[in-house]
Image (spheres, helix red, strand yellow):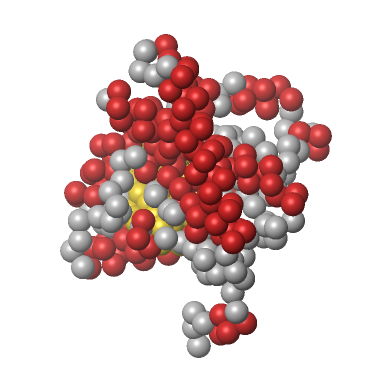
Length: 320
């Protein structure tokens, strides 16, 4: 366990430092696409992906960096994509919201709200038809559950008993609107799924080790028994909905609310647990940071040295 927890912490810290560097460099105007950062929400993708195999599939939405990296997506290709370079994971044509790495099992990131839910169900349907022993994980925000395709996808997955794990990252807000402005207080997506025949549960979304342990059996069951499942995680984004800045000055989230969640920072929780249980030393953590910084610096140099795509790329990968 000690060795495994160190790797899980490293992956969580790595995502945090990568996104902080994206935020730090965004004002240089080299990354011309919008960026939806996952700072504060890293525990869910890392906790889940630590239980996934290489051939397991994931799909995600606009806030996709953490999912891509946690599943093993190529960092150089991700940073190049943010810079619009042809060495990017979507050959420079998609930007932050269209990350893909088929070798790592990252099938798609699509920014249309709710769109990846039926896509993921389709992937899991293909897995079952081909009698493979893997699964598909669909990451989405709570706002996506208001789309009609959410219910339709749950129903189809339940009817055909598909190997799909629905993962809702509920940070309570869609842009600047709290979900209470759009949803009844009695609304519960787990109960909705139960009514369609899918089991599920709610899990606190900031302790990466707890998420890893609590989802291990769930992931294995979905894969082995070809049975859909849904998990809702309560979490919190530290920065603005879209962009690299702190938007507390807009006052749509109360200071008391913000401070409560900042105390639940996934990095702080994981670091404290490892140190208090003598699983890691401060020196090891500093070495982790140095190693990650070297990797990050190399990825930005890779992006800078890469060329922009040619105009003929515009006519490629288009469905007629």
